[in-house]
Length: 297
Image: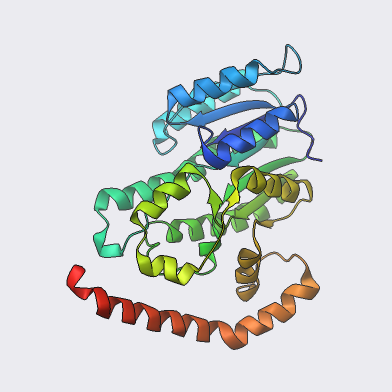
């Protein structure tokens, strides 16, 4: 079990969805949780609830409303952490959101929003917290939330998938750079999970995007959080929350970390033989959809 009792963790995107679920579960394990998100009211409500269920007088939850894409504010947060937080052992970069649309239907503001929420919020937070993690005399954890679309990007996710691919790359780099400091870096590649964000995605998601994704029953945020915590406990470098995400990872093994080697290798061979045929079929589906809906665009 992940040992966080009496220690401090930071959870971004903690006001709702997966971030909130992780904050609740980490606090239940005895962690002092620093909650970070933009919505002050939701954060304070969560912090108050957690503090009402403390295990001891030293067991604490902190609400820190913050837009993690604004570097000046993140630097101030770093100073606050340096002054107030002891024994930091985990940073969970959960903030993120998707606006599924065709690329030309996106506004530049929506594109900027994707860069800010899905990339800057992670890299800025890690830049101010890694020096604190390096001080620890025990093993610490960084958890970066990418997406299964990082392995296979397709129509509708141009505002989202490129940044999640960037987070995969960031995780690979930091894992190598920070291993000598006993800092474990895990990158999570969630599939669909039922959250407020998932509901918002479906409001704008093009029909062709849903068609390529196929039928998928989203798991609950609590189940997703449990899978993440289990993966961290096992020091997994890549954490998958569903089977299709693991398969997509196998199809693009390259230099990436391995899990279940004996199974991954034959699946990777299948990917070499057939993945391009699947992609070509998706190309055909897109052409058919565009031809049928050209008058609407």
